[in-house]
Length: 295
Length: 119
Image (cartoon, rainbow over all chains, first blue to last red; front, side, top):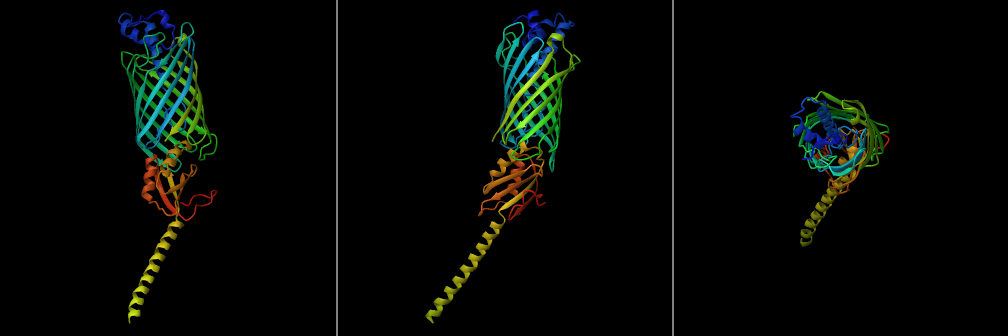
């Protein structure tokens, strides 16, 4: 067990420290503002690391999940590099998402994240983050000519596989189970998406309510094989009921569908509201990624 | 008398074979005429989604070519000359791709690309 110090307060995304603090320090300083800040930082980090990596979709949007699955036997790969610029550190995340449709309505998948953290005042750490598996099931589907209204429920289980014995830690040190619902009204002209998740975190860390909304719009006429440019605007938020803290990002994105199987995407997330101490704040996040369909 | 007894069955065999051959030829001609199908697919709202549909339809035995019109929500299929595919097989493939099949029609030839599908 590593002690939690003021030094680790200055480290980015120090989930391990949050964990240790929650377990050991809260006993003595329950009302201390610093502990609250630790918890907030942990929540934000977990959410930043995981809020978009599940959203393997067959099209837009970039930062919100979609209720459209891949079809029976459908497989794919999604990966992206996400650069997070914080006041006191730079973080790079490269998850590998592998979904597979067992039935037309049931999809399972896994997320293998590579994480690299470079604090501005300390040594960098890189390695495997917290591995996750997820399951999605379509509970409602209404199809019309050129449009669809769908809802799916999903469960995501994250495991504390990332090393949290180092500073800065690469994992949260906690098991997390997220229950979510994703809805979408998608037409050939535009798409509206909503994603709500409640993330239950072990080890005394606060639970989170994650909410994402998105609007996507194709810039070119629809055609097949696809040659398409989509723009999307997302609102990505995290609310921590225990602390009454809220964080909201405004996230414009761009997708370039190159052909039947390949989609390139990019986006930036800008904070519009952050209930954390100034040194912990996020300046911006930038994403550049690719999705490939494998059948 | 002997000649008559040989000629009559021979003539009958010839007639039967001619008739049956004509029937088979007509059936072939009918199949050749309807070697295309158009499927109206509901729920196909994005072109990146259509790849799964293309794969599922291509996997049907006898299908040699697929064309997908995302804007109008129509998949056009071309069959091998001697193979016919029933509507249920096509509808099942659409469902497996995660969409809802609407009307399925068989055609002798596909309509021109600029025109709307025949629904």
